[in-house]
Image (cartoon, rainbow, N blue to C red; front, side):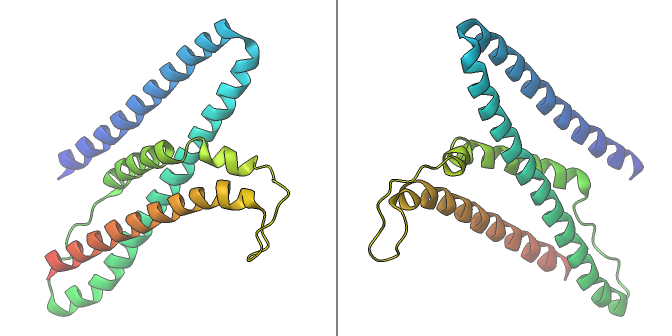
Length: 173
């Protein structure tokens, strides 16, 4: 049991290190390439890179916390039933699996949202308003597609999390 825990911890650390190495190699190589093209393009690359890293970090941290709090809630809910039946509480996925799932979901969110978040933050207004909702047309063209993408991603994540909870509860009884 102890060896399995050490192995999963080492595997998680290895995944994080591989991700860090790939990211740093990408950043260094792209920086060199953009310096050859021109310094003015380096600022654009840095802005896009910071956006990608920000999306990844926010998604990975929030996903990790949601999974950990879900496991705590499941453990509290099952504890009463298993103590009443004098059974052993099933083993729930630990931090290592939560970190790896958070990294994968962070990469997926980064892939789908990169470039869109900056367009919403730096959104310009067209000066014409919709006659029904009295909102600028730029909101409908730039902001709504990004909001829809984010909501779809949240919906898919909650559906997968619900299936995870059902699987844990089904295997427990």
